[in-house]
Length: 420
Ligand code: SAJ
Image (cartoon, rainbow, N blue to C red; front, side):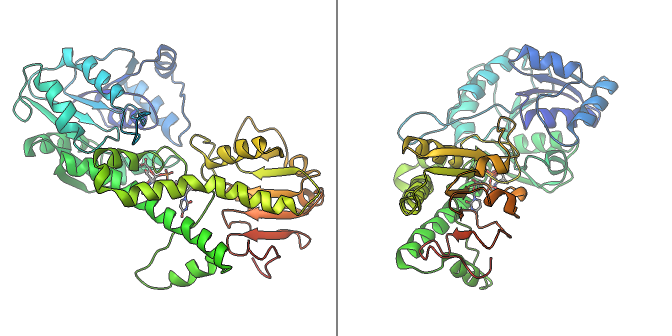
């Protein structure tokens, strides 16, 4: 099968390489000429375990070629970004999807399949993609087949998950679903779930909205418990002993390009029907301000002005600072006049060591759950002016007895907990 993949990012590139590895002739398309040239020379622009080896294999087989313009194929896969728009409800910006479609339209012929993998708002396939194709004189479901197949992989494990995760295939018609399922049959070993396009669009968005709303509930509980002087973390632990309860964990806010983005696509499509999702977004967006006000209260009791942030990424053990609440908190603390030092062993631009970042500091503020922060050496905290640590991720396991350890469970006490 000949496959053209438009968009060679975190999802498009691994997908293209897997199709090539499994014997298909794949054209990878991206706007960046430097990137496509590098790929043809075997050099990657993203880090993903196993991808470099598979790229070499695909190139050696002669099955993969990258270029800046699409070539004719039997199936086209669109994996371009869909950011939020800057409108009232931060709706889904489909401009890249539309320009990718425009670029493949001149190559379309009867019987071709077009699959959109980009995360899109509900009804995008029916209201935007289908009319674009039918305006060219094709009949969807009869001579061109359209489907939305959302991806659900975790960076760091993409090559495995693309093959083994269940895959939702949402066609405009049953025939569209069948045609798209046959394309993925090339390498997907997970369950193929056949659906209608709108169901596929909304199910992907609801996976991340489910998590966002549940995290908002945990964050709200952290605020309630602080106000009522009750240990929120113990409450969560105990409530979760119930077999049907799974309270999530509070934190400094919700970041990344999925949870902090996808719920808006649903909200914008049905604003009057989605008050809960909107409030959940507000609660999660309020967390950086909440953390900063707690820091201000803690620092008001000290004579120092230096705050040391541990972790700038949106979650642990990654190097991604995009949409990170930690970055927002850092800026707010600087604006509030604090002398802010940062320590993040996963972020290449961060140059301070733990010792250097802690020197003369009055507070360590843990914002990402990197494994390196599980055990905080005394050599870090010995250098502090005041030995206080506020762990917003509840992840520190050991820290010197001289340190006042605070988390969402005991923040109200301002005292060291007996065991952590
Ligand atoms: N977070 C909390 N409390 C929690 C769990 C997470 O505050 O109890 C925070 C994290 O610190 C982080 C944010 O939420 O800031 C998001 O982290 P995440 O690990 O939940 O999600 P992502 O955005 O890295 O990946 C999600 C995943 N979706 C689900 O778990 C439903 C992933 O499987 C998807 O592939 C990805 O979105 C995607 O591409 O849609």
